[in-house]
Length: 162
Length: 116
Image (cartoon, rainbow over all chains, first blue to last red; front, side):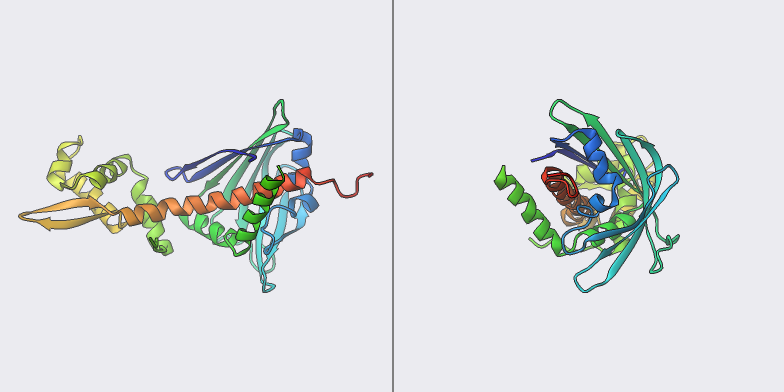
């Protein structure tokens, strides 16, 4: 399994996941910076993500939506806070309304992605910091859709393939 | 067992309650041993009233319950609520586990548009 560890801190409202990949940091950077690659893994198979804008510069914005099984759309945005290719990527993540405008009524999350070169490839540390528990719940609702079972099945398949 | 779902107000109360060191300590203590507020108050360098306030916050969050025992009211931890709190972070972890599984799939797949 590529996941090395997960750490949940209910006090600070953070989740830290460390994973290792057999690919160099420059390659792992691409799955974050290239919207076509990003949308292949960000959303679960039945709620695929589509990034309409992905402006990977400090202060730049991304706009994306996830399409549900009934055609419903959940929209979100990112704003890049810090970038150090191919080592560090930090962004604010929020919800958007139907027209794609950031919804100021909704609190935001912060994502910090660190890529470290290892002998085997890359160690990726993703830290998600939640402003409030409400935000965490909304994200769980957005992500915990029926497709999750399918996504987990894909992991099993990968593991079976060795 | 079925872990009940919390509504968002409940979740906010829950995490607010757990954001304090003394309150976390109280919860940990009364999960294993029921205790009256006076007994709890002896363990902390704060007034009885302050400890009573902490217990009230925990009670509103559903983390502890009080029950009558003879002449005293004993505080005890509510395991179901604590499980529900941990469950939220567990669910978010699952989202990320699934993402990383897909990411790995993508990294091991031949790149589209590459020369063969």
